[in-house]
Amino acid sequence: LSIGCLAQDKAQFTMPITPLNNNMLVKGQKIVTHFLLKNEEIAMVMDQGKDKMTYLINCSTKELVMLVNEKDKQKIGIKSKIPAPKVKEGVLDMGKITPTDETKVIAGHTCKKYLAENNRSKGYAWITTDIGFNYSQFTAKLNALADSNDSFVPGNFLSQIKGFPILLVMTDKEGNTSAQTTFTKISIGSCDEKVFSLEGYEIKEHLIQGVD
Image (cartoon, rainbow, N blue to C red; front, side, top):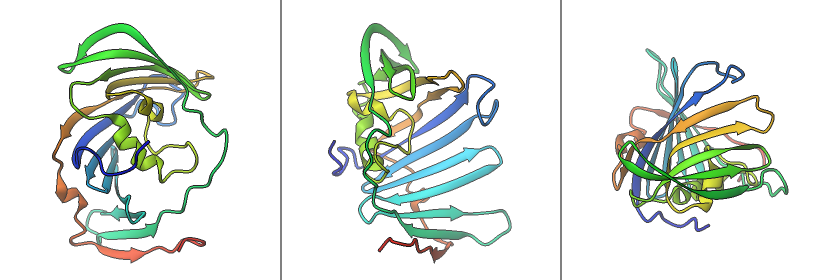
């Protein structure tokens, strides 16, 4: 996978993850993550109801800033270097992707169904090619910063497919956890750049042992 500049230097989308069974860690609670891309920067805004956290990742400098903005308190940004990935074998294989002949329109996008399975989970994804953006262009940047084949985002295995997921349903091999991820508010070529602003934040350096 290429980890150079994205073909589109700006993009954003939202990923609400909804538990489908009662064994999820967050029972019945939707977890929403907003992803924004601007050149070599990625913003992740994680919203779990009462709690909201923003992470700013610079893929070029390999720096992470965690923004803390509690009500009626000082706005603080915790800045740290992202440790170099540890090379491990066999943590997570990219899995097997099997295309089907099934198609349907979801949220106005013509999608094709793919079956997916790896050593942790199995499920299916509905993929569209009509928005001119490949999911792999996004995952490649985050995966380059992660340990081994671990990933910061769901559906890492979808990097094998040309196109962008609109709906993803995955269940772990033991059947204990099952969740549906939808991809909404997709915008290619633009993003809310205010999310990347550090204006008004006091930035504090967090040193990690062994990281230059």
